[in-house]
Length: 363
Image 1 (cartoon, rainbow, N blue to C red):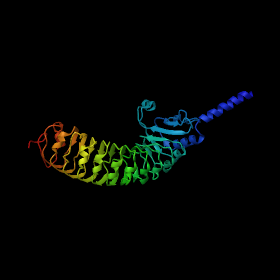
Image 2: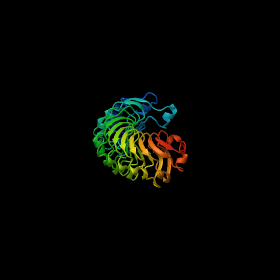
Image 3: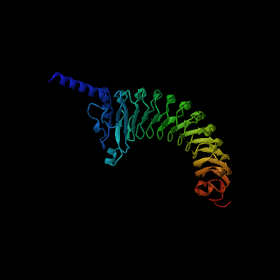
């Protein structure tokens, strides 16, 4: 073999090696894979060869460094693998701490596999470039890692629909870039962090179906971008902060299924909120008579409380009310005529002290 040909082969081999992922990244992925069992779709069948940047299902690399940047494995997908199998994914096993040996990871999505157990590896908090952590729809238990606040670049934290327990770590309020927080349907307990308002970029805070206790911090209202706040089906008590109704972009406020007490703040009825659910609490006093053209509700649910007095006549001056439920309270007096009352069912008014008029019996 001539020297020139040898040089060409050496150069080609060197270039190929330079374009492949580092052996350490490949070894970390193989250790990660070894802790998981996916029996139906064969999504790991493509994880062969030395270059984990090339055609490994769910793995993406940074074009410049050739380091693994993204792991995106979803158990519910429109990918041809799923369509051919006519089924959603099911995977068992656990998330190996080997995943933390991929230091350039920007996103980790291991979602909707239904059978993955174990815990969130503590070492994940040492991945300095992580922006997305999405583990929704598994059976992951244990606590949220106490050092979660070290992930200063994190914009999405979604661990909904798991078996996560313990408190929300105080360090979570250090996530100054966090925009989407979804902790729904877990076993999280304790109170909301006192300085929750430090999550200044937050637009969605979804924390329903947990065991969160204590009161609602009024300082939440200083999160300017917050559009969706769902604290339903927890163990919260105390009053609803008046300041929530003064938030610039808050469009959805769900507090149903708690032990919230006191009066309904008047600010909530004349605000940017269009989906307001305060049902199944311990609210008392009158419904504030402050509705006006700025009041626009697709949903207004005040059912299953201890509200008294009449239905406010000013509701008729609201711009729009789609669904309204005032049932199971202690309201009394005539139901106002006209919109929106002329399109509501009797079930919206039943089980009160002495309401009368259409759609109930005449006064």
